[in-house]
Length: 121
Length: 108
Image (tube, rainbow over all chains, first blue to last red; front, side, top):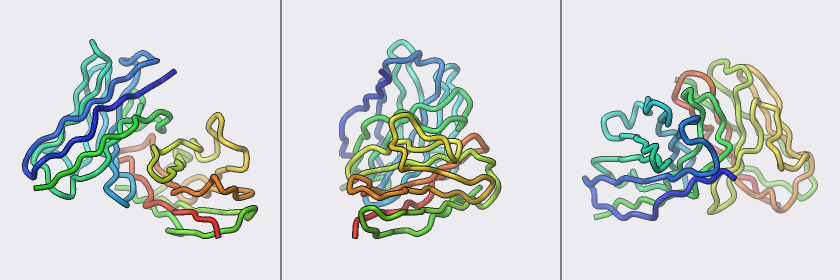
């Protein structure tokens, strides 16, 4: 069965970076992409970006350009999302979701369990 | 960017009621519209894709319709376990893959 297992909760100071992992199993990793979605406390869902696990192509939300980097490690079927220069409004639960090899071509059938990132001094 | 607007933002209904949530896209998106259900403290769950296709395992009281810019999610007979926030999302078009702001559904 398809599973996406994310890394644990993080507490970071403003200005720091965080790197969240998403380990995939139950399917051929390089046949799909991974999208990242975040949800601030009490707020809605925000699409952050996408990466192809086949060739590493990425597409990021404009508001995060320059602060976010998405990568994959095909040897371990793991996707990573790094967010830099953290601010308090980056406090959120971060989700990975399986997408298609074409950016945004698929709804999200499978989600990770979420990783809470708290940014606080 | 295409904006996705849901209405209402919150809704209270009685068990057994028919409930309708609407989602409007600022530009046509054909039928590339998904609906998700998120229960408190849980991961979003795909309910409907391609505007009207029920995801496997989702109760048949859920249905979706629409094309172009106007879409609806309908629960034919509200059950207590349907208390959740519902989100629409466009896909298979140019990014960003915006979600609606959500509709919080409660039992009256």
